[in-house]
Length: 256
Image 1 (cartoon, one colour):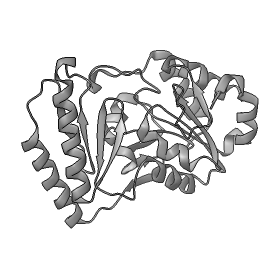
Image 2 (cartoon, helix red, strand yellow):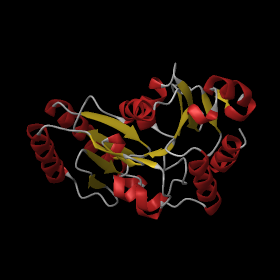
Image 3 (tube, rainbow, N blue to C red):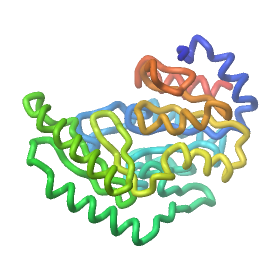
């Protein structure tokens, strides 16, 4: 894993002509700093301004791929002309694009039953809450107290067991657990779909947690993957030291 700004020329050569690239970014922890509660996340004005310029320069080739529900990430970003992929890529909208991953009614019914079961198992730990996003479910524990850590770990272990028995899958985020209704769909598959939709020759993606690893794996041979924060186990070829470097990253792309 190499620091992107020390290897910028190599990354640029791997991407080829910038107008043929699909430029994708995660939201939380990438375009916006991580905060205690998701509702409080916000992009800094400089990042918003640069992202807007990027969307204008490469129309139909710039997008946000987020675990947040589609309408929520659209409100948070608020830039017209972008491709928006929400709920881990289960719902996508953008210029001349409106698409939803189809999950069978039987599977959705089973998923709803799993959600109801997990709500019953919830141990009432302060700061532990479940977010139902229809196609995925997120168990948030960022706001829990250190004194409750053992209870939180016990609940998460129970969740993983219940999910596995029900035939669904989990993904780890930053102090959150994502549960997927479709075991064959994730951010990586959504990035692949968007590549075909936009007829991009290469893909650039920046993300910060375990749910982004599915994209990093897809891009090992077809693009450039950048992780926010160095990790010895990540599939991303490059990293940035911290989220605040995202503005510098966007400016570098604009200078291509």
